[in-house]
Length: 64
Image (tube, rainbow, N blue to C red):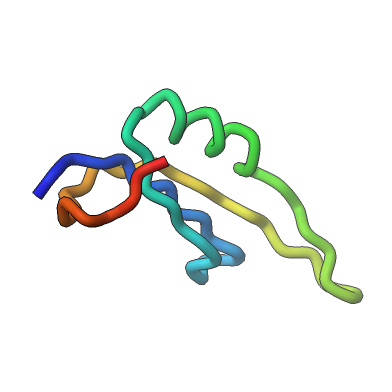
């Protein structure tokens, strides 16, 4: 096992994507870029929220 920072993004409360990072700085950079965006889908607007979380992953997991 090794430590990683998981970037999780939610679209109206539903998981939309995730990525594992070796550095909190990298995770925070992408979080700041993606967080608090408003996405229009037809007539509807949805909020995109992201956060970083410290997790344990397998040695084989690719970290960005």
